[in-house]
Length: 196
Image (cartoon, rainbow, N blue to C red; front, side, top):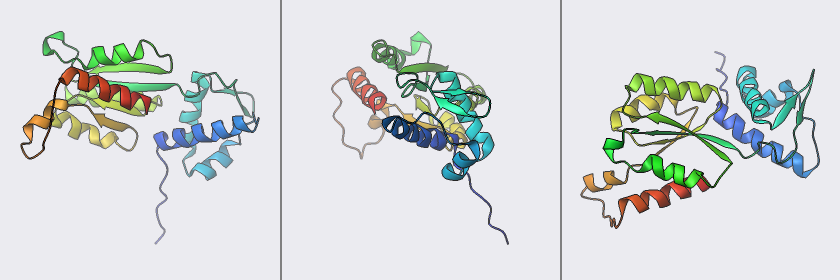
C-alpha cells in the first residue's frame, strides 16, 4: 500500500522561506529558486507555496516577473507580521487586552493587528480566522472561552495560537500564583510574545 504524502503547512512554509530569504540576502542573492525547486525543498504542495509567495509579493518582500521571482530591497516587508487578536471588543467587558495591544503596536511598524470579536458566534470567529489564514496570517492571540478555543483547534495546523487569560490562574487552586496587577501582567506578557 502506497504511503500518503504529507505536506508542510502554510505557516511552516512561510517560516522556512523567511529564513531562506534572510540567508539569500546575506549572500547577496536576489533570484529565488523555481517553484518546483522550492516545493521539493520545503516539502509542500504547489498551491501552498503559491499562496505564501503571493503574500510575499503583496507585502513587498518579493517581485514576480514573467518566469522568475526576485527579492525586493532588504528593508521591504521582511520581518513584517500580520497577527490576529481574538478578544472581546465590547468596552463593557473591561478586558484591557485590545488597548494593551494597541499601546504596544503604536510604536512599531513591523506588525499589523487584525481584531476579531471573541463574543461573536464560534462559527463567525472560525470563518474569519480561516480567511486570514488563507491570506498568510499565521499567529493568533486568543482571549476566549474554552468552547471557542475548541472550535479553533481545527485551524492549529495553519495558525499558532497563544492563549492570553491571566484570570484562569485563579480557577485552579492547585496552581500557586502571585498576581499583583492583572493589567500590567497582561501588558508584560503581550510585549514578550510580540517581541518573540
